[in-house]
Length: 286
Figure 1: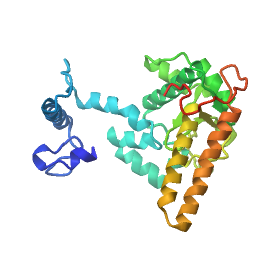
Figure 2 (figure 1 turned 90 degrees about the horizontal axis):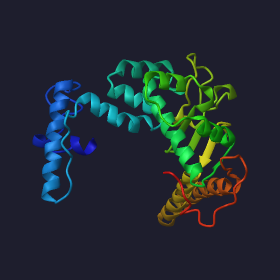
Figure 3 (figure 1 turned 120 degrees about the horizontal axis):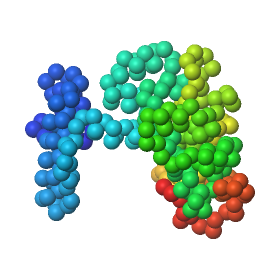
């Protein structure tokens, strides 16, 4: 989106805002912008002999675009607030921000997208375990059970409502901090604000705490921590003394988290798994 917004005026996308008033674009305006962008992208692709965007028999409308990008936005920390903006619920975002409700997990602005996030997390867990991967952390056993319980798909409104009502399968992925959450509000999760008055229905992934009893790690998370450790070590080599020390301490923390995972992970039956000989190439669903 940032790239599109910085295109020269004749090519600028109006998918988000009107060029003339700065107001949110309307549905018809967005539909026109989508068509113009598809034509623009296909023209560039043709010049570089690359595959373009295939013609859609029913047309790509604003509603379909929002539903397509919805899961990607929702899978980020505080993603429900981003979705609220995309879907036009700006008043809810402002109210939550000023009312101190953000820490309580966004109060489920868009429950279907929350269900989609949980579905993706559980499917990734099941696929990782089936491929020989493991899960570690305080909530590892609960995460394994949740992945085994879930049927694999939500097809109807009844399905996702049933999913959100089942406390045993509330699992979330937090890619920004390389950790998962098998959310259980009865454990008094430290990510939530004790003064919040609204229902605690999902975690605040932007406030994930290292001592939370709901945390779990997958092999994918462990490799992310290893990657971050290597990246921070490389930055430390170029940083001045005090900054280099801080970077190396943080890198050590990531490396310790990964090492602990490989040493304590369990498989689908709950039994300990031996550390793999090559953690970089060990199978994982993601």
